[in-house]
Length: 265
Image (cartoon, rainbow, N blue to C red; front, top):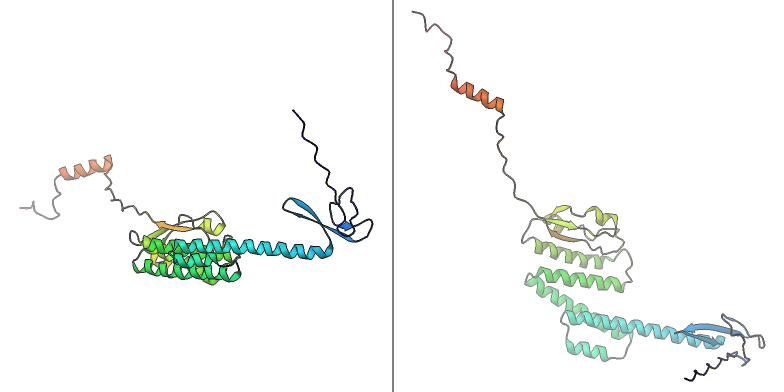
């Protein structure tokens, strides 16, 4: 079996004057001959040796590539959310086929937000509170991620999350008057309220979720129906042995004669 031929040595030359660099530089430095700067960059597993003028083009191209990757992901995610809430397939197709740009990302976002509002209105009209809660949670999470998960969340995002919580409480109110808070383990505030029971009317009036100061911004705490056991009947205590004996003796003995002179002639 023939041994594979050894790989040809990689020759690295100065990008300014062409002088062979042996050994190749591992970081940016001056060429030993022309004294111009050799910029070393690593990209996709390769080592690049650039002039200072080429560096500007390289950085600009890399920035453009990163932007396009971000736009691609954002447009894809908004269109996927739009599909889940029944956005028009034709409009989703047109936006997906449009040239990639910030405008196409905004169009996908607008399409989703309009579609989710229609879906929430329809679910609210039919009193499908579970659907309302799911859609609002999803919407709040998407906008929170778009904002970079910066804490605290904006007033708009908190309002959407609380709308989801309110829908959950309305769904639970069909079977219970009180709710138990199922607290997440992400922070002391969430852990402190775990398994506590509250009145639904109070939570609808002044919602406590999401917990202020939660490191997740939109905490994962939720509500469950509070299980209330029926009141137990109080059992009458049986008298002790001494008490029973006293009661029996009292019942067996004749009543005392009232005071007076009934025996006198």
